[in-house]
Image 1: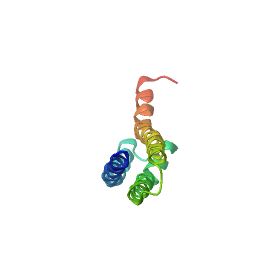
Image 2: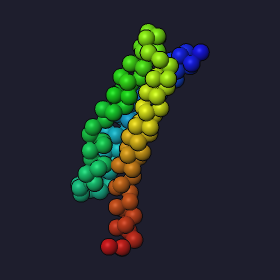
Image 3: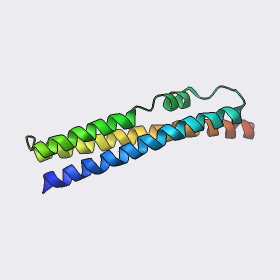
Length: 119
């Protein structure tokens, strides 16, 4: 039963990563256009530029989840190894998601600081 549940978790994460990667690709491209119009050609934070240009990490998550599903269906690995892989994957992916959210909000922080007049 553990193996079937782990397989289902990996399948669910695969589907969610595909949706997230698809959405993030379109959102990042339109986000850069909007920010360049708002900032009128001024430089964006490097962190934001980097995350908008390199959107490979959701697809890497899809590949890892497909490997997890395959290992779960082959039944050659222990269930505890798959559960550990799942937990480590979730921690790493949540870290990347948090970094992406911070990167998308960095320009607004700079904008608020500029409006407040603080140094």
